[in-house]
Image 1 (cartoon, rainbow, N blue to C red):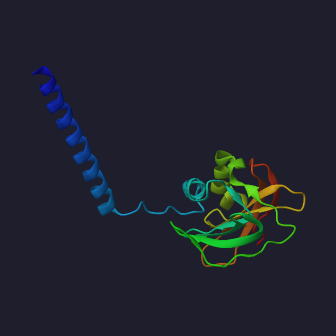
Image 2: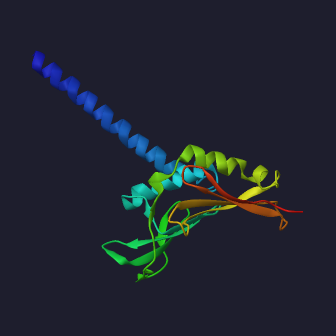
Image 3: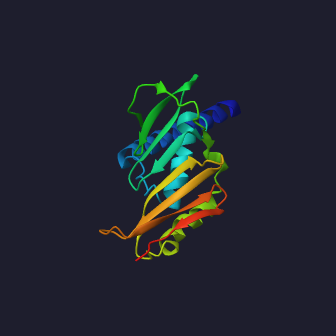
Length: 183
């Protein structure tokens, strides 16, 4: 008799757990996907890096440009390091090219090497640093410079004008060059 009560209790708990899980899935599906943050913001950068790692299993990229609502990047083709594919990201990853010959001097960099805190501080401070305190970050570009350093370039501009500039820094937040707005 005692065994029967344990089996009934365990079955009831299991049915409740499955019902709760299904309700959660249905509820989440009804809510739709989580909205994409501005990719040029610290939250957007962190979201992009996390989604990129989940999509590709690594964080290696040849070049990357983040805009507020989308990103574009190139990465080596899976299984063929001599070819690359171009991708876009707007909450989903899409390849918009067929494999192309990768330049012989292409250097991949690893987004895992980003100091997200330092880079976020640089992004947030860019408009003031560039003498456009009421400006907004228009794009964040990632590349490798002539010295082989992985770099970040933040471009900020006053909306509706050509008043802007950009700052370049290393993945650890160390400034390399500043090109502020000059009235």
